[in-house]
Length: 465
Image (tube, rainbow, N blue to C red; front, side):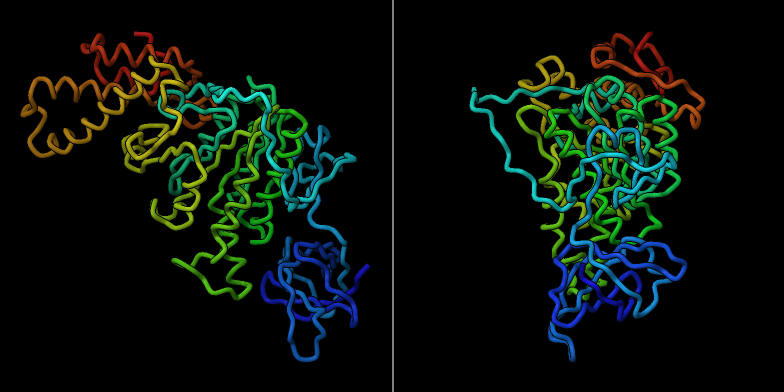
């Protein structure tokens, strides 16, 4: 066991010197020390320092995975000889843990024989020898009208929920977990990276109350933890998902928020003294994001379906970190602050969003035609809305006025009371099947309900008029 001592602490960064003549520990290896009050503190090696005066290449720079407050200079440090190892397997189901795989749900230790390195390289992808030249797409019904209609969730895909602060990303993820987990046979892995502690607590209690906690694993490194923990927790979460997928189990992988993962990497880069790139982000942004995202993949026997919340700083979709995340997603649901102000929940703006699965070969001709008609109607509505603001609806032609009223009904119909938000809205949440959604949209588009006022379509489930 290698022994060393802390020779310097700079915020969450610790400089550790090992015994003369010894080889330093490897990159990403975990070191252990203790604070003044006897608490164990883990450090992760990020960099070897060479060329320092009086040193023989046995000095390393580490990031604290826990707070370094109370860690004194010259305190002894021991090398564990291993990277972060998280528990995996059936025994972790129903548990909540931190980045190191330690339980934080006050249910006692996690008893399992299986552990995996969080930084392990994934196995090469396996392809079926019986290839017919076509890929089979399986749609996961979410029960949320606007998502099932315009952003169908395909098993094995990556979906991003993008928006600024307070637009409902976490609430949509909670509703998706509630609606999908009860029906699917696989497991759910939720990774909380850099978000609020309150949200993590609410999610856990909601999963317990809905009795779906036994099919889920929660891994947290929240906003009040070190940048090292917030960065590494994404790898810890995806490691557990990889294990279940290799066991032949379908996995739903949620992360809230993948932007905070990139942001933690930026903080680490600054602490390590690297020259920043565009707008202050780390020069390794693309490689770090690809290393994480490319681990979320499916095999021939089981799939990993990822739903990623993406915080958009200042509602700026051109932010370099957000743009980097774009390239790995199959579907992007952009939340609109304007929709929030209008009271349209969920606040997904279909015209700013996109989905690569809106294809008649995947979703069927009926679904595709309805979705295209709705997108065209909403796009024309935005053009007419600007005219109405200036000259009034009376100046529109009869045809445009009919389309304008139809679009308002459609926009209201795509709102929905959430089951997991009943305590906030006071309305009973509803699960709406895809067929009910398509039938309701068809009736509105055919002007069968032209006599019904707009307000009757607002915040309802299936159309029962």
